[in-house]
Amino acid sequence: KGRAVLEGALPGDAEVLARWSDGRPFMARRNVGRGQAYVVGLPISAEQSDFALRPAFLALLDHLLQQAERLGGPARTTAGVAWLFPASGELKVTGPGGELEADLDSPDESQPATRRVTPDRLGRYRVDQSGEATHRIVSLSADELRRRAEATAQTSLASPESTQASRIDVSPHVAFALLALLTLELFVRIWRRAREPSDAEPPASRRASDAAKA
Image 1 (spheres, rainbow, N blue to C red):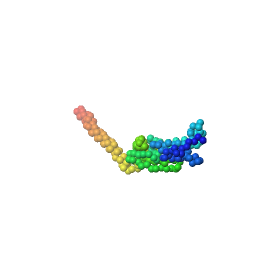
Image 2 (image 1 turned 45 degrees about the vertical axis):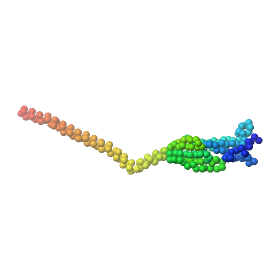
Image 3 (image 1 turned 30 degrees about the horizontal axis):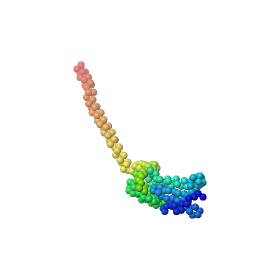
Image 4 (image 1 turned 180 degrees about the horizontal axis):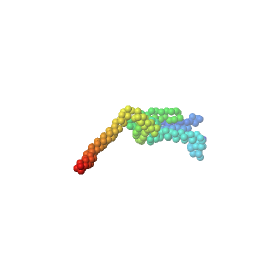
């Protein structure tokens, strides 16, 4: 009572997901552009049917939310995270390395067939789907950035070239300091030699004065 007869009213490309006990379609799905359209054979108004009050309706809503999350496509993801698209319709994904190939993915009968694209390079990607163009960004995760930084630091410490480069970088400063010390010592010696004659005059003048008095 109150059910709609979907048989004969569904488009040819619609997929029947559930049937009544008599074999007639109860729920069907059809890909429309970038999304999907679902139709059920019972009204969801509580005044006309108790379908919306049953636990199965909540399970159906949860399923629809999961499908929307899988096929919606986030604007920013990390490298290696797959993007899912409907199996039908035009699809072209272009990234820093050129066009990416899409693999057909069919998990099970309860899940719709999808196409999977996995970007593995950082950068900006253009997604052309059913005549509509969008852009997505692929970046590295925080764990991957930390691992790369640690690997670079360990490689730098273990490399003989880096150790030799560090010695070469320090040697000019050491040479300059030694040159400054030598220059200072040279000036001190010259100053001391210049001071020696003047320091010797008072004793000589005193000897001459003592000789005159005698």
